[in-house]
Length: 123
Length: 123
DNA sequence: GTGCTGCTTCGACGCATGTCAACATAGACG
DNA sequence: CGTCTATGTTGACATGCGTCGAAGCAGCAC
Image 1 (tube, rainbow over the protein chains, first blue to last red):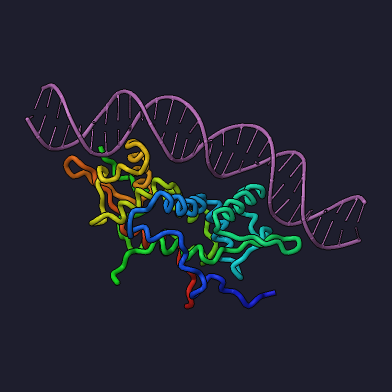
Image 2 (cartoon, rainbow over the protein chains, first blue to last red):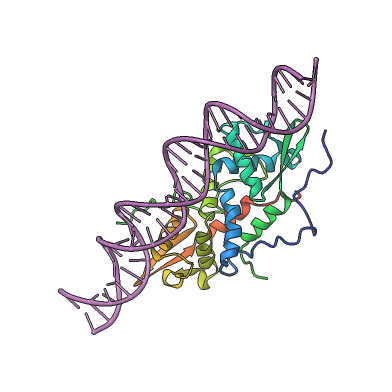
């Protein structure tokens, strides 16, 4: 069934502006900021993980069952391994519904990473 | 001798908004798109490289001399190694001016990566 | 020229990571 | 209960990657 919440990516004012890091161009990153941000970039630094993330992010309703994503070229244990990595990095969230496990994109993630790459435009 | 084939990611012909990949949320990435985009993410997936990139990106004039960035906690050969990695990924460009070597951010990179993380806003 | 300084490259070490086959777990269905 | 399907976990392997010291190059100063 199709649920009505098909746009989980747009949180107008709920998320607290993603307290990760300032834009990369604003000031030199502190070691801690770099550690935090690098964890996210590293999680997306693998082609298989990037395809999995893109597959989940672009799937209908913002979530996808593992059964839907078995054709990325690696074995299923490897898929599970990568999904776990993405979850540990805070990029995905998983939920078991009966037989299947669904993964969805953590809403504030894209906004946070997008903010990282914001070009310092004139105010 | 300087060979010109050091930029496998960006075609310097046009540099019109970096035709790398669509937003991650738009459609599942193809293997090739994932390979290309993952290379950029992986380059920023190391804390030291992220600090170096941020240092260059936030430096005055958009460029920084290597002599300015010697306090990231690793030895200078390691700094040079990471800068080379960033250059190979198409994120930085280097230029020797006299005694010193200056690195600057490849302009279209931030825009390209920002586009990757664009949230599918209302049409 | 000789020396000095800044940066890169080389060689090597050790740790992290991607991958798979095999096994283990969770729920559904009889 | 038993069995089947769907995921996750474990162990092992090979490869990749970050790090350093030492050596090599490129300009500047003398």
